[in-house]
Figure (cartoon, rainbow, N blue to C red):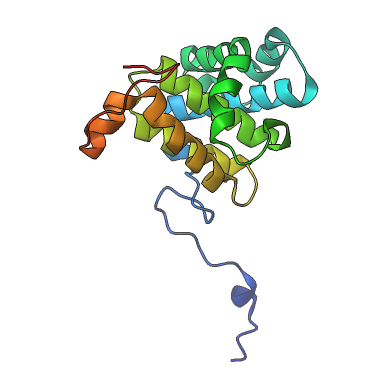
Length: 183
């Protein structure tokens, strides 16, 4: 045969590994916290791009399909914590960027807010999980290489905000604490 059968025009079947062809996790394999991060990202995007206040964005997001599968307490903490602490989060993130924060895509900006917020306030989430979750968000919703950029910025921020945890994971003595660091 010439290889031009109807079957040859179909994309190859994706393996059932829990990931899509881009490497992002399939919806069925996502935890309630991962879903909460996705909804928080969508809400933070609306806030950054549209300037909408937290209450309006929150009401809209809670009506989206699938919200009932998200950890609503984690979503609340992320959405309201990031918006209320935006200036402080930006001050933590900006030194780890190679450009001005105003030049960063709103998706990557919101993902980094989520990461920095979780580093500071969600100490039950290991630092490596925070970074991995943010990379997944950037892969799924951000630009082509946005996940690499998010990884670099949050990877540099983690030792500042989670010094003891990062040092213990790496088997090195913790660096001296800096402003904003959690011990």
